[in-house]
Image (cartoon, rainbow, N blue to C red; front, side, top):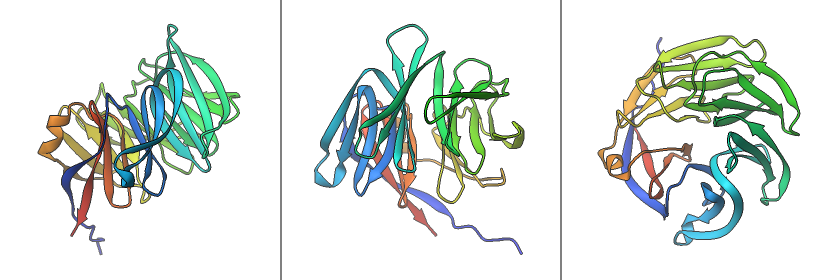
Length: 255
């Protein structure tokens, strides 16, 4: 008997934080989110009227934020040519570790205590420990628009050039499944193992089940007015999006 899955619809857009370009958003704690920006990361309490509780300044652009256990892992583009930095913080936003990486990084994922890096150029996925120790690369000959952790032992890759989403196992390097999604950009894996894919050119979100089957596409015409959607996150029945003018969310309605 086929399992009946709930139908999801997107509610209206609710602005949480108005700002300049925001690159990524991540959950911190109750009513608090972390927002990646040029030169800083903000901790925002949106239950208190868009209040920035604290900021950490960086010499560069924070392009991704990945919570992992009691840590927060950041990708930072430095001002030097082809130089990137991985920064690990604790929940109190104290720096635990940082190290520089050469290349054109696109996104990072953290799985099984490994930091996995994708690049804007074709080439292998680079892997580090949380202490910054270089580990063996994972073979990859495609391009990577987005990357997300999919525990255990896997990551989700968005190949924007060829319109593919892959689930890749870290230990073997094998592709466990692939799915066709036109113009994929950012990806996120929710607590149910569902992969959310943002396609800005098509103004839609594609949902893929844990076995690689496409579940549905979701659209909201309001999002066209916000410009390019960059980072996305699903938390407590809300879809959070960051864009050219800040961060907001859309409620997920199930039926």
